[in-house]
Image (tube, rainbow over all chains, first blue to last red; front, side, top):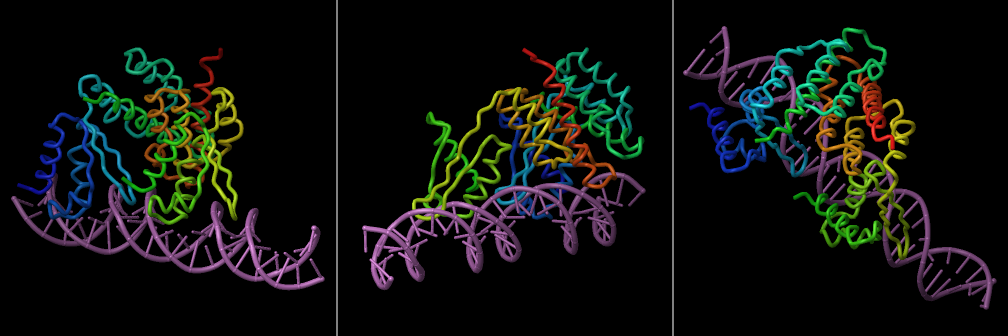
Length: 156
Length: 156
DNA sequence: TATTCAAAAAGGTCAAAGATAGTCAATCTA
DNA sequence: TAGATTGACTATCTTTGACCTTTTTGAATA
């Protein structure tokens, strides 16, 4: 069995015990499995990515950690589709607004949240001296980042 | 648990008991926690900054002290202050996160909204090839734009 | 008694060291 | 050749210590 697979099952094992959330020390785990610390990142990237239903947070420095959260697939299907396929890496303001409106109509977000998100992707927010294509790229990233946060609240 | 976190909770504990104000001796506290006195300053700087809703005063010399005051201000006032003065035209991610956390603590926004806003100003959202200063400028605009959406509701 | 001033008693600053985690490109292996 | 593994380099957060500034105290002096 590959080490990556072992690490994957080890983590999933931890999450089976009730909680849908684990916290670990990267270096500890790496030492436990006798691998390079960066391999933990590899496992996170390939087996615990958002499109696989997981979110991760971390902190560096003394007392640092990595936290992995499992999210519910059902309600987030549409969100995951948006984040991983639909949006891509460029989005105009009009497209963004249409998507946000749809999210609200499907009751994935509240009206208040829709306004906030619209604010974030508005031309006003992006009124800095950069080319239009970059703004569209930025808008895509911004919206995806916000949608990831929305997906994060459906914890299992 | 990190020492800094312990010190932080210790101080916040003290303030929960009625008063929104504490006075402490830096050296005493440092000795109590077995750390360098300057670590107290670190905690003040990273956890009791004005952005986090606190003000500090201090006095040196015999009978010196550090006083920490939790600032209370009406929500809408604070919003105006943020948009018109505090944020300005440049904001780092850390600063933005602190402000968003404050917004949530003061119940101006929900926890879900806080996550969405954090997503919008994250480095991940801004991972396009533009200079760092532009990102900070963009972040300032983005946050202000979202806060405008927040201000637009509850106009009571 | 009033003044002076050096020592003591605080707290402040900042940069270095320590402790984590992240990234990415090279290399290995099935 | 795709996926796995590694390690050098980077980024970030915490902790410490050397050195600095401000304030009080109290003994010596005018």
